[in-house]
Image 1: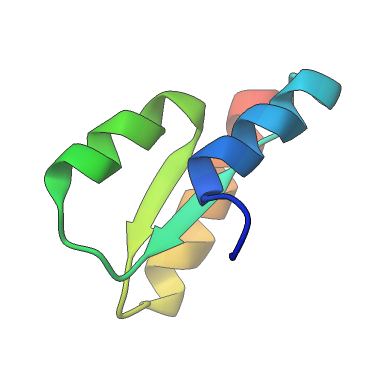
Image 2: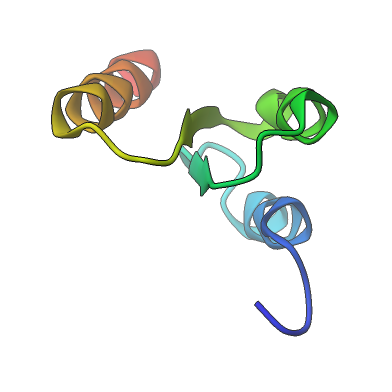
Length: 65
Protein backbone atom coordinates (compact mmCIF):
# COMPACT_ATOMS: atom_id res chain seq x y z
CA UNK A 1 0.00 0.00 0.00
CA UNK A 2 1.58 3.25 -1.04
CA UNK A 3 0.30 5.58 1.71
CA UNK A 4 0.41 3.42 4.84
CA UNK A 5 1.24 -0.05 6.06
CA UNK A 6 -1.10 -2.71 7.32
CA UNK A 7 -0.51 -1.82 10.97
CA UNK A 8 -1.47 1.81 10.41
CA UNK A 9 -4.53 0.79 8.41
CA UNK A 10 -5.62 -1.65 11.13
CA UNK A 11 -5.31 1.08 13.77
CA UNK A 12 -7.51 3.43 11.73
CA UNK A 13 -10.09 0.69 11.14
CA UNK A 14 -10.07 -0.20 14.87
CA UNK A 15 -10.90 3.45 15.68
CA UNK A 16 -14.11 3.10 13.67
CA UNK A 17 -14.86 -0.59 14.38
CA UNK A 18 -13.13 -1.49 17.66
CA UNK A 19 -14.39 -5.09 17.67
CA UNK A 20 -13.39 -5.96 14.10
CA UNK A 21 -11.31 -9.09 13.54
CA UNK A 22 -8.14 -8.60 11.51
CA UNK A 23 -5.99 -11.19 9.74
CA UNK A 24 -2.61 -9.85 8.64
CA UNK A 25 -0.71 -11.52 5.82
CA UNK A 26 2.88 -10.89 4.80
CA UNK A 27 5.79 -12.28 2.88
CA UNK A 28 8.31 -10.63 5.21
CA UNK A 29 10.14 -12.94 7.57
CA UNK A 30 11.17 -10.24 10.08
CA UNK A 31 9.89 -11.41 13.48
CA UNK A 32 9.91 -7.87 14.91
CA UNK A 33 7.30 -6.83 12.34
CA UNK A 34 5.10 -9.80 13.25
CA UNK A 35 5.30 -9.15 17.01
CA UNK A 36 4.52 -5.47 16.50
CA UNK A 37 1.24 -6.12 14.68
CA UNK A 38 0.01 -9.15 16.62
CA UNK A 39 -1.64 -6.95 19.24
CA UNK A 40 -4.14 -5.91 16.56
CA UNK A 41 -5.04 -9.32 15.12
CA UNK A 42 -3.91 -12.69 13.81
CA UNK A 43 -0.98 -13.13 11.45
CA UNK A 44 -0.30 -15.57 8.63
CA UNK A 45 2.86 -15.77 6.56
CA UNK A 46 3.22 -16.45 2.85
CA UNK A 47 3.13 -18.89 1.14
CA UNK A 48 -0.47 -19.44 2.16
CA UNK A 49 -1.91 -22.77 3.14
CA UNK A 50 -5.69 -22.72 2.77
CA UNK A 51 -6.25 -24.93 5.82
CA UNK A 52 -4.22 -22.47 7.90
CA UNK A 53 -6.12 -19.48 6.51
CA UNK A 54 -9.46 -21.12 7.32
CA UNK A 55 -8.23 -22.05 10.79
CA UNK A 56 -7.11 -18.47 11.52
CA UNK A 57 -10.39 -17.02 10.26
CA UNK A 58 -12.34 -19.49 12.40
CA UNK A 59 -10.26 -18.52 15.45
CA UNK A 60 -10.94 -14.82 14.82
CA UNK A 61 -14.66 -15.40 14.42
CA UNK A 62 -14.81 -17.58 17.54
CA UNK A 63 -13.19 -14.79 19.58
CA UNK A 64 -16.00 -12.45 18.56
CA UNK A 65 -18.81 -14.73 19.75
